[in-house]
Length: 203
Image (cartoon, rainbow, N blue to C red; front, side, top):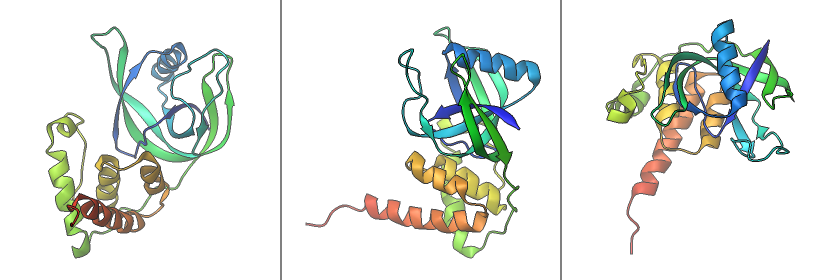
């Protein structure tokens, strides 16, 4: 299928929440089109390049080819006059081909990726569930209204990947994994590294 693409320095996971401030004409038109056609748009991570179009002859950013479809679940006029929307992550996809329209909107021919199995959590994952429960209690995260199934390996792996303070490229590698158990194993390694980084240096 064809989807308008929104290159960002953010990774969206299925079921995740993505608040955006829309100000560029190409994206305002894209949002209108999505609302009219009851369609989503594709969120893809920028590998190199800029989110905003800084000049008339600017090139499209280089993007990763695995992204997530976003469906608009809320919109409002912000106090600064810009359009605010909230996108909800849907199906993962792979970009087979992309091109720029005359209005500079990036379009893509995308292939939906298979739905991940739900998977089972084991005792080794208890620490991850504890961390996720702590994260979702944070006031800023509570506002996102995330739906988390703490007994579901897929849900836990997606939400923890989304919420941990790690680089977008690491989140992208987690998104590209096809199985929750792979993602959970990598999250355990990431948590171990984060703990190591937090330890005070010895003198």
